[in-house]
Amino acid sequence: MIITGLSGGGKSSALDALEDLGFYCVDNLPGPLLKGMVQEVQDQPQRYQRVAIGMDVRIGEQGLNEVTATLDQLSANLQVMLVFIEANNDVLMRRFSETRRRHPLIGEAGLAQAIEQERKLLNPIRERAEHTIDTSENNIHQLRHKIWRLAGNDLDPGIQTIVIESFAFKRGVPREIDFLFDARGLPNPHWDKALRPFDGRDEVVIAWLQSHPEVDEFKQDIVSFLNRWIPSLAGGQRSLLTIAIGCTGGQHRSVYLAESIAQTLNATQLRVRTFHRELV
Image 1 (cartoon, one colour):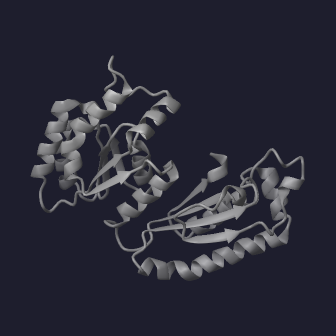
Image 2: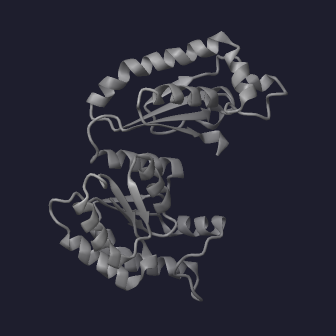
């Protein structure tokens, strides 16, 4: 996979998401080196089974021209997916303002002109992209899920990654999930003022929750459910399974359950990732 697109669009987040899937990732590869990297992948297919290369306008106009030429010459027996990530100008300008990052093409003309110049330089590559992702209305987590699902099209059959996400119901249910479990009926450490500053990854909270048998029963019910249905989902060509566990504040019960269930599933050689929405 080649990940490219506009600065501020989310390319780095996309590469991080692919790395979580086991891809060998290279960011900001100079244009002249792309051909050599492609040859290396062809020469050592066992070592480089899944490769993601990030490229952007920093390689310069000549480098971009070399990239387009290389893309046109790639061997037909090499699977290549070109993904272009972008966003509208207002969103890009806001992101650069919030992060105080410097656009790679900015000069005396200002940010708006730099974005337009970048669009023009990257347009030949954009026209070659099999997939274009507009992140204007997406946050980083939604982008990661899109990349995971997109990458799954070329992965081996079966579930490659399980994501277990904790969240707070008071902030809304996460989008693009497969299973949702509600932990609000369990004992809540929040009401113990000594535990309130901690979260479900801290030993004091873990010990408190493990002292309540119903918490372990709830966890075991989820694990049993997943063990029962994961094989059938894998047979249905699913590469990514997203499980959301919610509680009131997303700090204690859901975090503990996500981590504990992930440890249990990891023991079965499944690739499991956890994400705690309210702790980011």
